[in-house]
Length: 160
Image 1 (cartoon, helix red, strand yellow):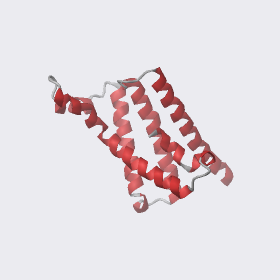
Image 2 (cartoon, one colour):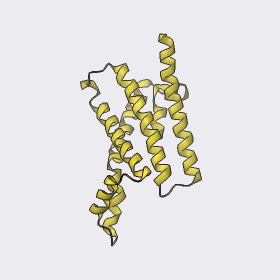
Image 3 (cartoon, one colour):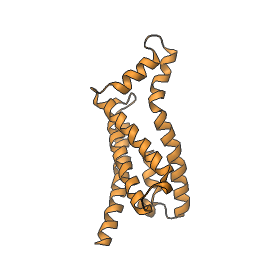
Image 4 (cartoon, one colour):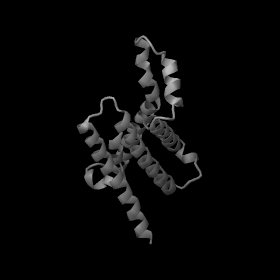
C-alpha cells in the first residue's frame, strides 16, 4: 500500500518510461484491492480465533472496536475510517461536488493522514514488527509523503 505514493504524478521522474494513464490505471487497481483488504483487516485479526479455544471471535471483535483506552486500537479505528473515506471518495469521485484538482488534493491529504496514522498503529500493535520492518515502513512511507507534499507545495508556489 505504501508504494501507491510512487504510482502518482509526484514521482513522475522515477517512472519516465511509463505513461501517466498506465500509472493511473495501476494506482486505481492496486488502490481498490488494498482498500478492500484493509477494510476487512479487523475481521482478519479475529478470524483465526475460530480455530482457537477460549475467547469467542465475535466477543474479540466487539472488544477490539469498542476499546478506546488503547492508543494502538484508537489509531487503527481512525485509520480504518480514513481508508473507507479514501475508497468512497475515489469510487464516487465523479459524483462529488469538487473539481478534479480539489479532489486530487483531498485524496493526497487523506492518503498522507492515513499512512501516518496506519503506520503509527502498525508500529505500536504490529505482532510481527521488528526494527527492519519498522525502518522500511518509516522510510518508504516518509519518502512517499515527502513526494506528495513536495508536489502540492510546488503547485501552490506556481500559482502565487
